[in-house]
Length: 178
Image (cartoon, rainbow, N blue to C red; front, side):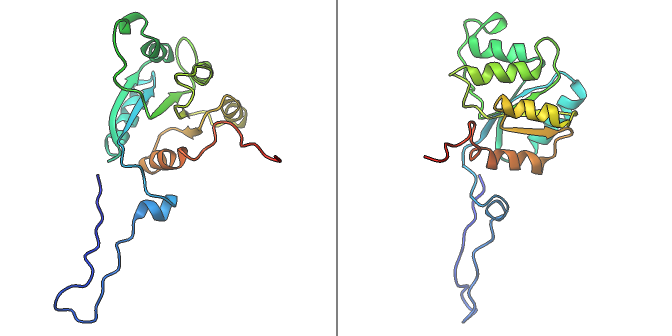
């Protein structure tokens, strides 16, 4: 946790007052980040990309836990307690899912669709992570209610931006004209 305090006047410096320290998160995102630490599910099959993303997440003071899966199918089984995960309790509901678009087995777009259709997982923010920045793929991801679409390699500033602006994204468009 980051605590920023303001001490007020400094003894011995008559007439000098200190200003509150600037908060870089308020300056950048317009609000203070939630003090809750993030639990991130990373779904990435490529070991090199996965290691880069994991190293990036480890540098974040806001990420408490990262669970990675090498396929979307394994992550889904984690939620529904199938296969290896049967008989287990889910101790970590993620606050954010980073989901690769191209995965072995069921691709990331189908996994996204299943996550958003399931009432147990539909509210979890999902960020599609890819090397493919085509407008068609991005449009398809947003149609399936992805919360963001980011290019590899991920940078810490971009991850923080996604984390702290993500909670204000509408998963469905707001009602207008009422």
